Length: 470
Ligand SMILES: Cc1cc2nc3c(=O)[nH]c(=O)nc-3n(C[C@H](O)[C@H](O)[C@H](O)COP(=O)(O)OP(=O)(O)OC[C@H]3O[C@@H](n4cnc5c(N)ncnc54)[C@H](O)[C@@H]3O)c2cc1C
Image 1: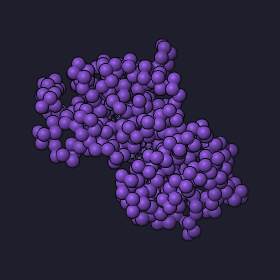
Image 2: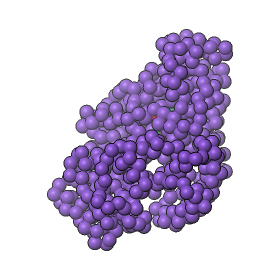
Image 3: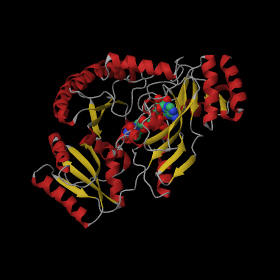
Image 4: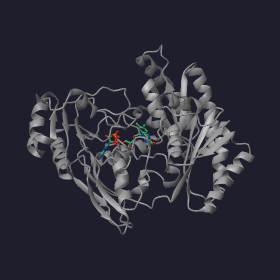
């Protein structure tokens, strides 16, 4: 009943066409549920009110109302997150940015685009391309994720090794704080040293400080031509040695990814791709380079020659056309999809200093052998960034509940190892609900206290995505 009254009040504020009350039947229950869920699959949605604002002022009206009435809010982007950040399971109101998907401005001098935060990331790529530019943040979920969700999670992706995280590509942000204030952080100028750069607090804040409604993203020139190389690598150590070799060639390395043979098998089973090589290998590496001219092509062969002579690889192939580029990328980017089609998995997205990686892996393998004896493990990731995606696959005979219980009991031991080797328990997926209880493995008590202080400034009543991150 209270929810119905809230829904009626919100309809008066922003228009009834933007307000969906669960029981009014305007959306079927599955679709309604899907706006309060992400890809974690471990939580059930429980909420009554779903809103589709169309501009920053609509968002402000909603948040002010929620602030005055102490109502919790979950910001909902493309719901591709893997940390439970967009899950509404405690009667919150869900604000979907899906209708806020327009281009607002383009600055040809700076090469920046201003868009609403609900724009699907791939559409932003197209908008940049149509203007002769390139937006380099990309990964397997960008056909569904929102640019606002990417910013709220400080997304990484497959080209971080060359272009960095999304944080490096944000010039300005418009946000509505948990108090309902609109802040417009910069956006038109490159240089602005006027005190604290507050937009960076919202990048990676997972909806806990306010709602990102608009952003100004920096663009760059597209790579002239790209070459994708797929390598068969017999030992883990060799992967790191190959990465070190790439520093000796002045050729822009756009991606450096790896996967195990288990991952490749899963992709072959589900996405009908053929074998890359006649013989299988324990590991595979995908490298992507930008090439400008003949001299660069020679450098590329130089790299292959060097790693072959040093016996770091057992086979290797340069894609000959765009179709082969796609196939090589499918081996890597098809892993998450293939795993989720056939299995329940427990995901860990972690990062380590590359120099500590081998020692960490030895410890990790020992832990897996004792705690997950007989379990299948899918290991892949953005290895050039020190980022591993460690996926524990549920054995058929275990129930989901028993499986997740087991994983929960092992996680602290895994996180202790990560801490010991100076890594992070979340490289790019964020903390959300999933890793909230383990934040202390990567952040000190004093840091967590400072974060709480910052949250209190922007969200004094704690209505923004409560229960997430902190
Ligand atoms: C197949 C696959 C591959 C992936 N690969 C990568 C990868 O390589 N790199 C990577 O970084 N991530 C990856 N992810 C994870 C995910 O896609 C990213 O975290 C993405 O940035 C989330 O964007 P989203 O719009 O889906 O956000 P959602 O899942 O909807 O939300 C994520 C968080 O941001 C908050 N939020 C969303 N929009 C806003 C907003 N406008 N204002 C304030 N808060 C908001 C939500 O409340 C939530 O806490 C992958 C996911 C999948 C399914």
